[in-house]
Length: 341
Image (tube, rainbow, N blue to C red; front, top):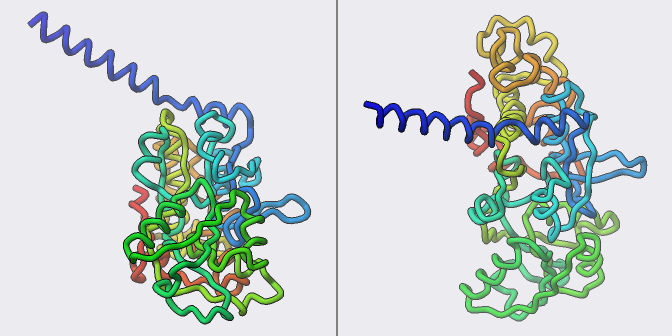
């Protein structure tokens, strides 16, 4: 009996130690600082993260940072944005230079494990494709044997394109460039025949060439799965939960028809799920360690997922990207949030 009690005490001690290790050290640092530090892509990606002449950042990935700040502080503007290159983004997160990485990073097994990161939910389901000048007359990626291809360094893109050409028994000449602006300049100047990357990045790159966007064609092939997701460091499960559920809250709000324009009226809803989501019925905020009106703050200040998508990427923007896989699950897409209950 004494041995059993000893083992039980040891188990409790280990559980306590583990719990202490996972206590909100990163969240505490964010709160003490009064600002969320969010890593975005150097050079920007139209529709996902771009900075204007006044230094204001906008885009779908930026909205995830804003939603997280709204949940923590009740203020979506309490965010500092740090531009990071493809090669430095993960080391910056590991080193604590940023709290959250929200910059079109693909969720992979090795990044999730070997790099000591937690990916907290897919912001945008994408796949790698190819863009070519229409004057080349290329209609399929299968016609690109021997082509020179602009490839962003420090990304899964390099491996994917090598695997694709090897599988198709074709050759290509890689032109590897780190900076996004330099890649665009190289492609539009004719330094390479093809630009490859996530299709969302291709749409953004084409839109960036405002003079002649219609001179370029995005080919139909998709050669990879690219679930683009925010990432945080291992070690603070509470902070990871807040980032994860801030994103889920935007999806859940869209599913229940809660928008930035009607959220005040929705506070009067008799629907028990809506009351729970918006904190009229308390409990969800306490469970997450934030204010009970955390979802209200997110939707009021940032909008639901559909609003963010349409504002940054949809038909009314230069990108004109269809929702596709990023429709709600109830509309044939993959965006699906666990219940807030």
